[in-house]
Image (cartoon, rainbow, N blue to C red):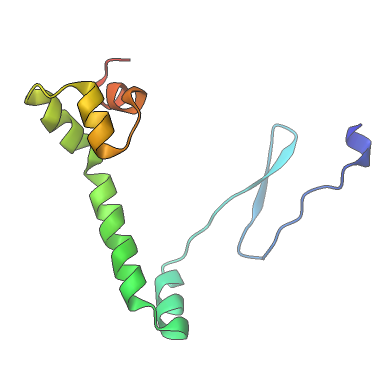
Length: 96
């Protein structure tokens, strides 16, 4: 059955592939100039700023969960307010 399948192909030269467990896997290689290229080409500085702000906010997720737990807020309420599963909350709190 696997003889009928075509091998995966790289979409661009910027997406190198690695051989892993008998499969080709895409390896992302972001460059420092990616942000500059987008802002210069499309004038999308505003969306880049929003993406960076989201990344910063996301990075603080775990400490916010731990802080809420320290204030004895229930895991289910934390999960509901943050939009995460209770499993994610338990994993961050080391209760899993």
